Image 1 (cartoon, rainbow, N blue to C red):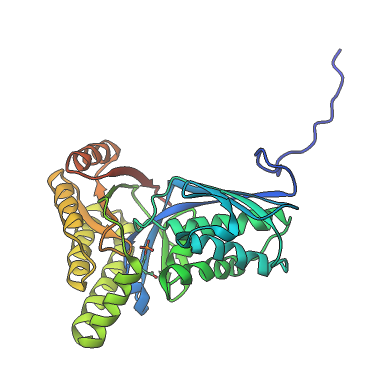
Image 2 (image 1 turned 30 degrees about the vertical axis):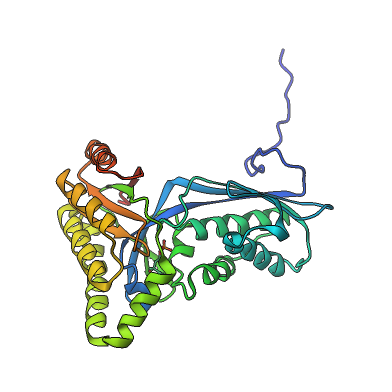
Length: 330
Ligand code: PMV
């Protein structure tokens, strides 16, 4: 005879992570911009996709001792963390202020597989994970807009005047349409098999954004035409995605790369990888993110083709390569 055992409902149990309570965890993913980087800063639409295979995770616990940070870049007291972790400490202070606990001591561990300064949203993803982990540790939640604004505090530190696209995309579960701070989902009729290749050259988003602004000061007509054309590619891609027209999406990506180079945010290493992707039969390839370094995004016809392009790009000198799939929504 078997006795009935009452099993507690663990459906919303906290993740099993070995930290003493009160503790919290937070996660976010990388993102890639499919269309509209830079143009989005001037109010044009952009399309971004989450890259779920690259993640940032944060474990955080409140401590009676002194505040501490453990990450791949630094292990030690929070107050002596190097300047390059400024964005990280800014995110923590923003969420602690929001919680009404600006002086709280926390021990924070960051684990991230997202390469830094490669246009894949590393800073926004780490900030998002910190915000979620702190809210979790304080056993509270916040609405979507509040979380977005908290991430934006540190994104401003990283980029000056970020459009907000990264802060949205690293928390998204599917492709996003973004314009002037507002987001919407997108219809995707056919899965997108994407390859991301790292040029090994540090992306310089802040300088690239400033460079575009400077060029616009000097020649508004030329730069506005380029920005308008990039926004037009986002609009066209929205329809192409809904129809599953992969060749047109690819052609749009290659055209976007050309326009971004004209805008002054290209780099020879990115041109080389975009050409190599085309040589491997990619439907299109473009730089992604702030540019002047960072990664190239290429569109394959299917998963096997993505693997073949990835191998080709590695052979062509990419310092790292990833594949990711954007699933169809219908
Ligand atoms: O380089 P990333 O991943 O931070 O992307 C920046 C995207 C830009 O459009 C260039 C800037 C922005 O604020 O949207």
